[in-house]
Length: 121
Image (cartoon, rainbow, N blue to C red; front, side):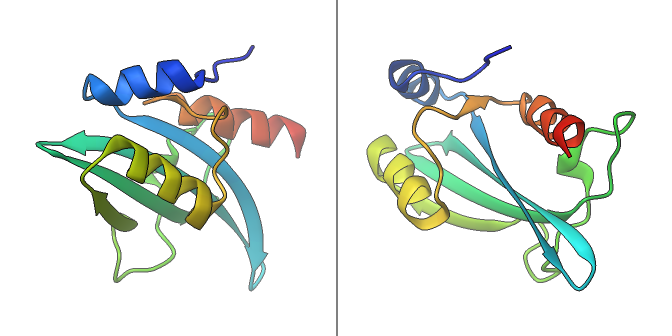
C-alpha cells in the first residue's frame, strides 16, 4: 500500500501545521543496526526538520521507533534545524539528509515504513 504524499499533499499538510515523516534507511555500526528518519513540522512561524538516528530495538510487535534509544545521548530528540519557510525546510531535508520529495508520509505512518523494512530484511 502506497501511503506516500504527493508534493502538493506535502505542502498542504505542512501549511496546515501537520507533521510529515520519511524513512531514510539504516546502517550498521559496531554490530548495531541504526535506523534513520526525518520529521518536518511547524511550530509558530517556523518549520523544523528533526533528523533521528536510533538503535533498531523493535520487532513486528514493537513498531514505535520514536521510543527507540537515540544514538547520540547529547541529542535526545535528534538533530533539529529551524527555517522560516516551508520550502527551506523541505529543501534542507532533501539536500542534507537525502530525503526524497515523493517519499514523505503522514505523521504516525513512520511505523508502517519501519514494518516494511522489517518485512524486507
